[in-house]
Image 1 (cartoon, helix red, strand yellow):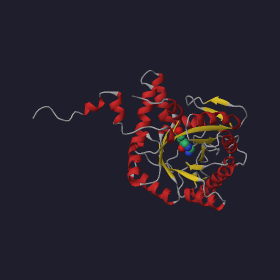
Image 2 (tube, rainbow, N blue to C red):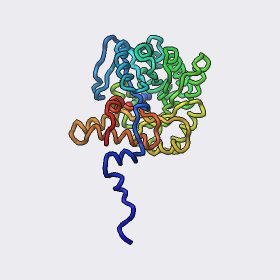
Image 3 (cartoon, rainbow, N blue to C red):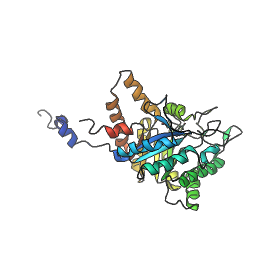
Image 4 (cartoon, rainbow, N blue to C red):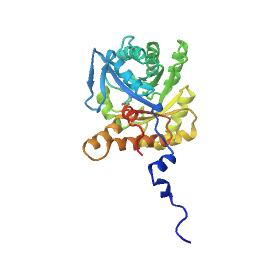
Length: 326
Ligand code: PBG
């Protein structure tokens, strides 16, 4: 026997050869860019915990939407911060809430941009939990009723898609019914189906002022040690009417994305969360790694694992970085 016939390095010799055999490509078509909307006027304030991200007032969101659409990004995911918080998070379904107003502004500035809204209560409740708290516990079914009201108010304001991120059991079916009974049968649901109780939401909770005032989210968000259960969560959300299911965070859960891809036919979204984003940013700022290359590798891996849709704070950077890398 001579030297091996097969030399896999042959196909790595030049940029052209590498491009020819590249199995996974990132496309701007699958990106979703998150935005944070606050009460106020003419406000575009940098978010301290999240590099290159801003708190925007509803009147300022038009410019941002036009820029995003101009980059070819098809969708935004809106998070709202209220003026006032209360135990039930009632500002979440306020007709003239900042998020509700922002939807109209976006639709005017960029009619083709898909508007997805995060449906949750944590930024709106004074205790910071994602639902109604009774006797120190989050009451599942009472919360589902409120989430349906929130989703409906987003649909009435013109949202194309609602994205419940609370992890209550049964909320997708509550929301689907509320939408259907009110003439919004065409509004899509992207369910945060397998959402884990993760340490990687830290920067976001500062940005959305949504950290729980007591305890943690482990009674509703999933245990990071579980993946069979993640598939059960996803199956249930599909059964209840979700059009798109999400795995969140992405990086520590690539196996979950992969398994979901093998098992289910519906579109799968992955949320490249704030901690994943800022980890790259902080390491790059410390001179420890190359921001663009790390971004590309991270986002490509999520796609390679099987995600169709990528929700990421890198969306604008990815859209600008054509042909990265060779
Ligand atoms: C709200 C929500 C969270 C994120 C999205 N929606 C935080 C949480 O569950 O505490 C996290 C997003 C990110 O970290 O980028 N339920």
